Structure formats: C-alpha cells, structure tokens
Length: 165
Ligand SMILES: [Zn+2]
Image 1: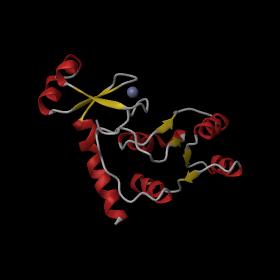
Image 2: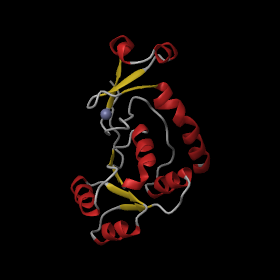
Image 3: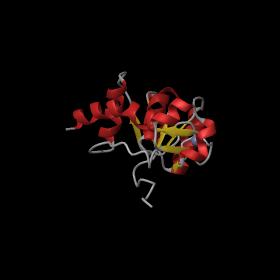
Image 4: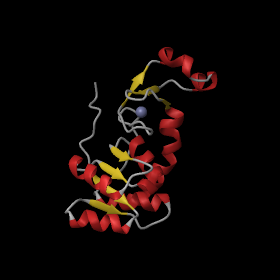
C-alpha cells in the first residue's frame, strides 16, 4: 500500500477562499475550511493544529503574525495567481495530481479507492461506463471518480507548473 498522507504543510483556508480549499484538498493537502467562521476561532484551531493560515483578510493575517503563526496573505484575484502565491510561499517545486492521496473536497478527510461494483447503485450509468477508478471518502461517503478528481484539475495544474519552471 502506498503511503497516503503527505508530509507537507497543512493549512487553514479562510472563508473567502473556498475554491482554493477545494483544489488543495484534491491535490492531497490537508486543508481545514469553514464557509463561516470568526477570526478568533480560526486562529485558535490553526494554532492548536499548527496549520498555515491562508487568507485575503489583512486584519486576520496581522493577528496571526502577532502570534508568531505562519500565514500566507493572498493579494491576487485570479485563481492561478492566488495558487502561485501559496506555492511560492511554501517552496513547492511542482504540483502533481494523484487520486490516491486526494482528500474529500467536502470534509477534508482521506479518500480510499473503492471497487466500482460496491458503489454502482449510487452513481449514474454514464459515469459508471466512462470511469474505471473510483474513490470514496472514509468520513462522509462522498464518491469521486477521475472526471471529478483528476481531469477537471489537470488543466489548472498544468498552468501552474508552466509558471513554476
Ligand atoms: Zn468527505
């Protein structure tokens, strides 16, 4: 069995950056995210779990800095630019998609590969026919397949990697 967790930074993504949280999770990065959370609570959790705060909120970033916590201040608007700000601040060389390390976009838990026979009742025939690999979230039972997991993300990742070279 391949090792499923990455020994890479873990994040707390601020409420305004849901798309970033989703992408980080699909790429296998443990990324806490709540669509609605106050600064104090966010800081407490991030501090306890040693998560790097990712935010567009300058006030929150200032608070984190005061407490000597790691944070990434996102200033750009475009998603690719935002992602590059994150990658550059943690010195990642290259990002790679790997369905086997992806986390659930809904709850941030690990997913595991699942035989299509087991989950066939829960997905449409079209999806069943056009996909061989499926994953299931161990926590919320959400099902993923390559169409959602990988293909949609590939173009985005390619654009990022072009910029990293
Ligand atoms: Zn889940």
